[in-house]
Image 1 (cartoon, one colour):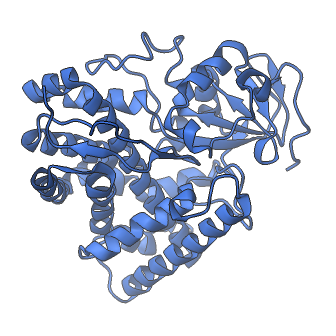
Image 2 (spheres, rainbow, N blue to C red):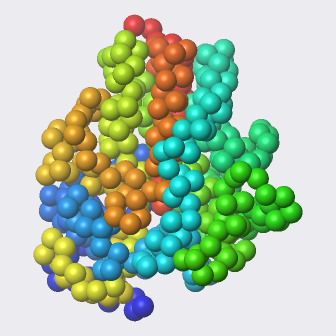
Length: 417
């Protein structure tokens, strides 16, 4: 594919609208990007930035949803911006386009369907309840470190059939954070070479771990994800290679850990700031399902990249094959053309047509598991901690990258009013 040929007619420079180049790795932007997305939506819905080799930033719901639903026009490879050096083949199934994408998804769709995911609920609830008990005892803590990170990691260990181990759980968190955010491990924002080195090293270590699980399952199958991949057929024609299985597992780790961690972090940040919403949910837990959907909409975290395959016009800008673009869901979900009062948290919002789990053929494989984890987390926290708050003068920091994530969330298991 060719590289972008510079700004197309009709696409305005993001720097002129924002006063600086668009940079999704900027921690300040990652903490609260919504004001900048509003500026782009209003005056520059298809903006061009020189950052990271040059690409287009979409900010309207209609355009972003169209990109997700048109894999024949927009390739998912590579999904990260800038692409990781040496990233020469699509990750399975995240970056695979049709028709191969469908064959990979058919292998595991049943394993991630509602019926199977429901069987995980007792273990998921036990992990959540144990962490909540510790939080209640500590009274003041970092919500990310005490709950949002370890919780989905423990669930993943269960999914791949590995006996729970605290040290391994924490190691998974470290690897995923380094790969997706880089700044979590000392590579400072702006030092692109150092960030890429951190990502590469963490990826190698995660692959080494997954290779060990794979080799163990070759010797002894279990009722787990990697065993299913080993025994699966691709399109009824062949077995998956070791590389395909490891890539599949790698994607599941990153998607399964980071997204739930981040969604929980932002959800409880906003709840901690809103005693009125806390009280409504505590008084009526039946609001939890719609509240979860609303927080998924309100603070969407995925910042996916696409490569244009066919000429396509979006918001008056004609994009050409080889052009790179990003489709930040945080921009789509605050679009007033798609949502009434988009900047308000309405915990009983219905309907809620958010696309936090994507759309089209690349709709998130793990959406049912993520929803289960979110629902259980809300239920268990509100059973034990019905009133909570942020410490006075709490400082918040975020990581940017392929997903936005809170670095820490100072938290109190009580509030004064």
